Amino acid sequence: MDPITHGLASFAATRAFFPRASRLTVVAAVAAGTAADLDELSAFFGPSAYFAAHHTATHSLLGTVLLALLAAALLSALFPKKENQPTRFLVAFAAAFLAAALHLALDLAQAGGVALFWPLRTQRYALDWLGGIDPWILAILVAGVLFPLLLRLVTEEIGAKEKGPRGRWGALLALLAMLAYTGARVSLHASAVAALDSRTYRGQMAHRAAAFPEAASPFAWRGIVETESALHLLAVPAGPGASFNPEAGQTIFKPEPSAALDAARGTDAARRFLAVARFPKATVEKTPEGYRVTLRDLAGAAAGESARSLAAAIDLTPDAQVRRQAIIWERDLAQ
Image (tube, rainbow, N blue to C red; front, side, top):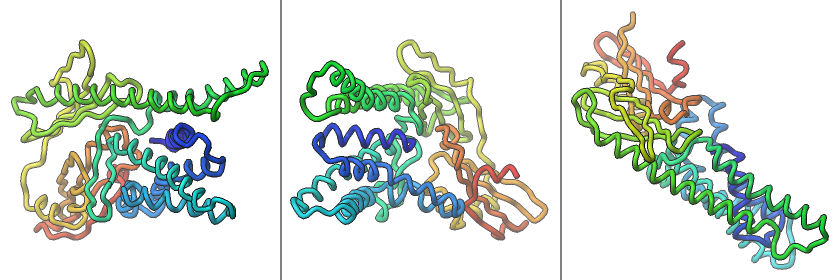
């Protein structure tokens, strides 16, 4: 999710479940709920650093706890109070942990994948329910935050006194609406995957399939199906009356087995990349120096997250000896 959505979700969760929290506690919670995306800064240090850092440490269960502790500790250190300091720290930690956990849950519901059990396991988990930027969730959260402010202005104008903590019910309704919307997405995603699994593609059965959300409509999905010889990219409508044509997509054939491909797959760069890639596509090209094998992950393009997509590039000699290997930006392959 984008930082604005994460910030609003953190604010709504804090207002809903910690309605009497101080402003500083709310600030600490929102900071904890958005800090995980600081791993995006790793892109400035190159594709290899981004590959290692993105959605790993800060998007793990351990990282979630540590971010909440850090936010609460900074609040206590920068704005100390002698009275009720232990209680204040615990409330700040609980609010920050809720916000950071909500961030993790929202990113888990997307297609990019998060390393939940880092550093014990580097496996990525992705549910493919929500897009990287979801205008519907953003609209729900904006309404949940702004409506109480407008209501407050109205009540102050007519001289009425507001009962209860400010903004709590608006935040609760926004979170419930977001939960209901996500539930609908879960059902539609299951329908899209079932449609992909139930068809044949050029006479071959699907080995595995995935459906990725379109941001504009919960009824439109982008699918990938892997068969014995190819990968198929398709548009998949979901919902009542949806009609799916398995022949209307793009077919990308897998390369023929070769010594160059086998050697490339045995490199460290390829093993690291394939451990994360969900639908890898290999390409073998003849070059003046020998061969170049490139590995891409088609899931990134299908999920609409190609801006910082990565690839593995392995250069080999004519007799399939590795000359060079690297994790690179996919956009650099065209240069």
